[in-house]
Image (cartoon, rainbow, N blue to C red; front, side, top):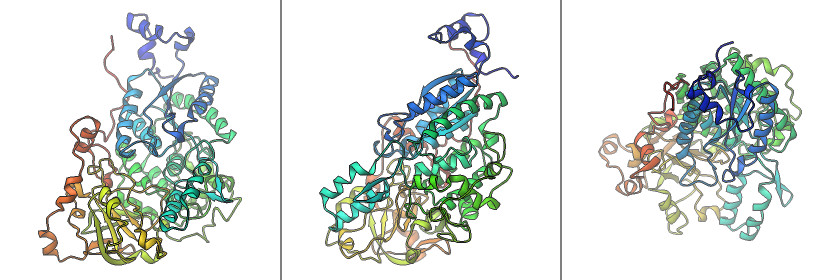
Length: 571
């Protein structure tokens, strides 16, 4: 057996090893330091991350499993980001959380790690940090909440917030009724029950090979989640014994498998920036175009909000992730392994679909071509993305005049102005919402529709933005426009009245402005006034170093990895 990494701290009889052991002897017996694997439980539980609030209970089951397998479990609280709570946007803190996780995993006497996450940015940050250290690691996803109902109708958290709030603005739902739905929507512990970013990234963590096979998508209150947590603790010890590391598991083939799954599931567009960032930490050759090349022709099989009708506990009941993957097995890389050491496809043998309304047959998909489409043009030289599965089919080829907003504040101030020159054919353009400009790339791209159009029955319009949108959102929204306006991107040049041409079939996004006029046009000075200009702290470091959406919006100094070696003693 290879020497445990933790032995670099605990083995020996000198003063330093004495210090390291003695300060841990608060209930640990002497044989805890005899070569047993020390496993950190990187725990993102927090009352301010409500979707992760139950992870302390999950951590206890993980610890029991580690004990059973002969390891030493060690609770390691790490930075937790509550998607619904933090301002200005949770995405601002993803890279910081990943950096803090990386440094704590490297700095401490541990041999492996179990990564506990659920809410949108927590699993991406955990995977980014673990990839940069490359210690044996396994993800334990916290799982989705159960379905709540309002007036006898199931509620999709996130998606129905957008829908119900628009009905209030349209005058078809009273404010009091809207507020009454608030206590019905969040029925239990767990993250969003739609196919939003949290559900998407929990499922894709398994497709990447980084979870115990079969665990992703288990509802948070389901007793089987704690059973899986116990088994994950056992597996963590086995990973250390086998010295199986994330770089062996998350290969290019694993990421391409995740892209296939993303399309079949109808998953969140946010997966694009997260998968690109994780791949960047591993040095895996993955580009934005891989999402289009690999996923564009994959059929949408899962009928879940926001692209469909059902919710996450329905998916679990219908057969879960493995049943979906079995339908597209021929599109998966059979060489890509999981943390078990066996290929992902080996775990699909007995997968069955129990409800064909929720998981459609490959021959009868909801949509035949469901993957993320990557667009280019004079508005997006480095690309933009759109999710056809969540869009209105009649708007995927569209030409209309721009109505431009220079900031989120400008949008809120003018959107419902009765005198706003806007029709259903207009294209709403919002800029200043990219990684540098906001800062942090907020989920504002799915702009509300003007009130006067809502009153006319309009429920979708083409919208273009350099920010992101919630994975629970829907509509014909072009997002992640790169370069962003604040980084000198051409979105800063668009003026109200310019004709915007969206042609998803031909992967184009253009402003129909003569080339000479376009080249000579200056960026909007009003937009520039609203760009972020922090003077200190993480925001300053972030704005100075963050990359664009097409590379995953990671900070330039965090791409790549440094391994697990610590060269110097602390005393």
